[in-house]
Length: 363
Image 1 (tube, rainbow, N blue to C red):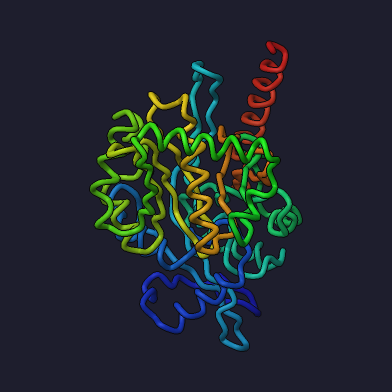
Image 2 (image 1 turned 90 degrees about the vertical axis):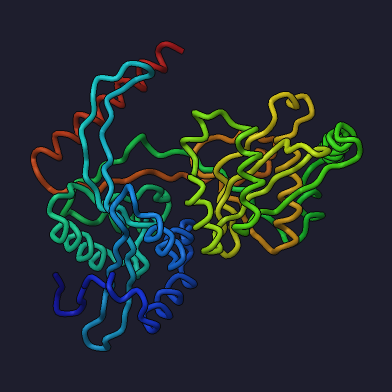
């Protein structure tokens, strides 16, 4: 599908094309999306290499007809979302929503309303079994969201409302980062680190984990710091190996004495650490080991010119909340226009509103 100005086509079989790859990287460098790491050629290759349980990713290009220039690159995957009708342990059921998921929650192209409408219309026509286009982490104040609201060819549905996401901005030096805290806070951070070092008989070491050969010791530490049930929800050994091979894995581990006591799991983009989990030895809770590993990781990140730690959805338990920046993001579904989908969205919105009202009343 296209119009007189633009042509949209499947470019999945052209992944190895050097000109396309060069253009892809240029569009990525120009993007200010927080999810750039998920739009990168490296992440696309990672998904291809681990596509065993899910369908492999696909790539589409938006081409300007007159010039022949690629003005947009759209990496995506097909996934199944659902409208869940649940409150706590009460689960009434769910409605499946097969979806086209845009990696990074945005296309790598100009966020013009007419161009977005053309792309979304194309994707829903190209994937007739899918009922929605999924933008899993769309900022509420983004130009993309404002332009989506101008469109009329689909039903917009926000899963689980807008949610607060925390980020830790990182200055050019660790000293500048620490200067934002008062003297008591700085003293406590140093004291916590000193006490943990004393617990390890003077040995407290931070390990930056990026390479495949570092994974065996990290996986051994992970098995000690998590439960088997929790471990099944994390990356597999092969997924971690592929992330490391593609230069995206960035984890931290601290050893107290000769024992691992805390671990951070994350992904890196050019200047951002996407932090997913902090695990620590529960027996050392009194030594604030979770705060200490984050404190030590921030020092390392500042020295490597990182500018941000993105913590994603939710409210972190760490003690740097006063220095965090917050943004609103949401999981937006652009539903195929149909009576069934409009009814499903209305029912789910009503259910969520009733549950939220009941929770406020109970409190």
